[in-house]
Length: 313
Image (cartoon, rainbow, N blue to C red; front, side):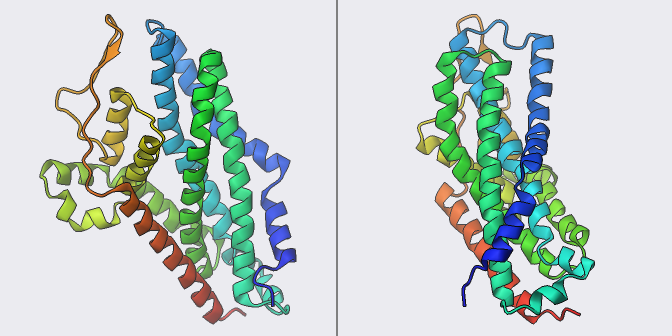
């Protein structure tokens, strides 16, 4: 018996990946870019910068935007929405009994749905990254010089986004197999999302300031730090150097960089930027990656086992 059922795979893939859905998603992910461009032009944020410094600054801002939005909140919400309905929606709509009555194993059903999701979300991610890079270059009139710089980010951002999709997709799938509706499966994932990007921030900051973070239990479940650590590690592996104001923004939200008490600034008069910020280095990027890959795999395998034993009437 085939592990992936073609009919289920194709149905899930087509249900989620349509021109209409891609267009809606692109409109959603472009909103922060349009808002930032409008705000910066009105405030004349980059009017005093040379083209080279402007490109460096905005390419760094694009990488922040990608971390928090393109490869972060927007992608996580889309992945969670798709995967949260794998079982829960079928149960709530009463179609699951008919599906499991077919000569297809429950494991095959779930694997087929998840692989279709992985294929669809990869296309969503790639298209949104290309579109957003073009949008930033156009909105800020960065010129031909910046095209190669922005395009060079795409492979790394795409690989990172696939990892994020599979991680949160596996979590949403796990909640889907134990829930009776999509909303009940989606809410816990939203809670994890809020903890990752927002709720743990003051706790992490306090523990780092007290110099007890590394040995505290919070550090073991701090997905926000691990994602930031992995993201910065991938950028450094490509030789990408973030300017200190961008490092400061990433460090404030993830704890990856040590934030100096006096802050950071750009010397507009002399056209240079202060030296790099020091990394906290609580874990290596490889440790952050391997930990959450193992957790993702364990969660997904647990989903298969639970679904096999779930009583569906």
